[in-house]
Image (cartoon, rainbow, N blue to C red):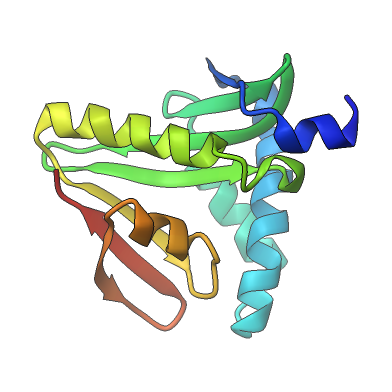
Length: 153
């Protein structure tokens, strides 16, 4: 696919993940986490890979596609009391064109229908915090490396 076309295309779909999506998901996860955790002095590749392996649950993951090409993934989990936006990662060429916002807004609508809060956590320094604030998420708590946010319908 032509690189300039990628940056303007916002037509996407979500498909259920399968074990074959592990490599793509892990690559996007590490590419996102490494610079953020390195800046915080907390990068440990072995630990990050191990944590990723424990997080990767195909029952909770959808792969984002544009024109049949896998360009990212989103993971949402649910408890009795809340919904969690656990992960959302898009290839850089597909960021900042509305795909992530559309996915999050859909998750917010589904969460609102369940009358539950939507929670998320992100590593400090993640520029997506601007998007989350714009969508109405509020700071819930934080620690040395993570910021925890909450959205209530």
